[in-house]
Picture 1 (cartoon, helix red, strand yellow):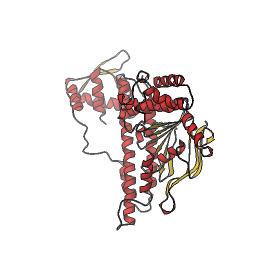
Picture 2 (picture 1 turned 180 degrees about the vertical axis):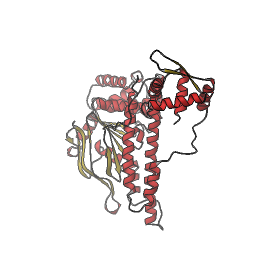
Picture 3 (picture 1 turned 90 degrees about the vertical axis):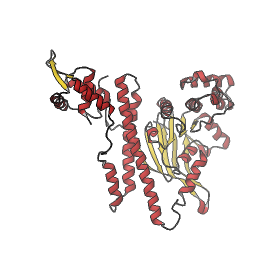
Picture 4 (picture 1 turned 60 degrees about the horizontal axis):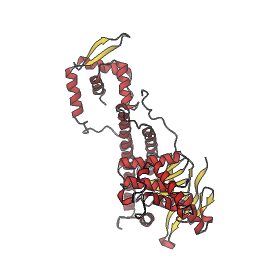
Length: 200
Length: 239
């Protein structure tokens, strides 16, 4: 995550000192991605070095107030208008774990999938609970609610992917067991599906 | 907490002999007052069968289905129908409203069938429509309403007369994301107010509104997530 750009974007609102920046950041994003104040000051030092922000003055309590420069404004504008790169997906432990579970002998892949689905479902329930309470339309509350939506959609996508893995594995197992017959269904699953539909 | 709905070792077999299909296999399941339980599973996992048994629309091959302390299997057809009208409310994906009746008449119908005077039943219906946010649409016909509004009427119909068990089968399936979420919010609110709800869905995002999520596979309960929070994250402190 680009702490540098997030802090610059906040400074564009108004000059602030380190603790203020952290508080403003967390008001918008919750504590989903906690920032420690040391990280904030290191980043501010770097922003100053690169000419994107200026340590301007000290307030009465001795806080060093930072202000964005013109170059900093250009940097923020570029950040907002440039899509986040998707060329190098972050290493996904779950995808790697499943890829290995499928190939390593003796691993019960079905259990791996179900345990993960339960854990992700649990997280999704937590996000949804928080979302139910975040109903305000003030910008900061809306920002937090949208961050929650992002977590909700990601968790949902993971569960859908797990469902997909499970059905592909089942189909593959059936095909391996009966390589010559029609690879469509087991004797039980098709009538059960038809039956469930007929109750609708 | 008392269980409003209790399934004990319920098995449902459709057909006989080699063609027999086990839709549910010894499933035990409970929904308590104040609780919304989601049931998830792929097509054919038995989730709709579970709902039709819970609602007294079908009888189990084996096991017990108890609603508010009454075993449905022990009731005759008339008594079971009465139980369905007074204790159990349904919400379907396709809304299932009667097109020739207004919103208020749709909601009042089961109460009138149950012997409540028409005037009283309609007044009740209007009050519940008010509660689900569409009091001003009470005299509209379903065809003149949006999908979200029709589903609100269906929810009003499911809860009128203080029914304590709400069974919802993919209630948001035909709605867009935001409208679907409003429907879940309503369902959730009814459960928070003391009803027991069972929500059948294949969408994780919708199941996440429930206190518990039960996973079905091939007619069996394979897993269940509880309600306790894992404190993955907290809300922003500064408000």
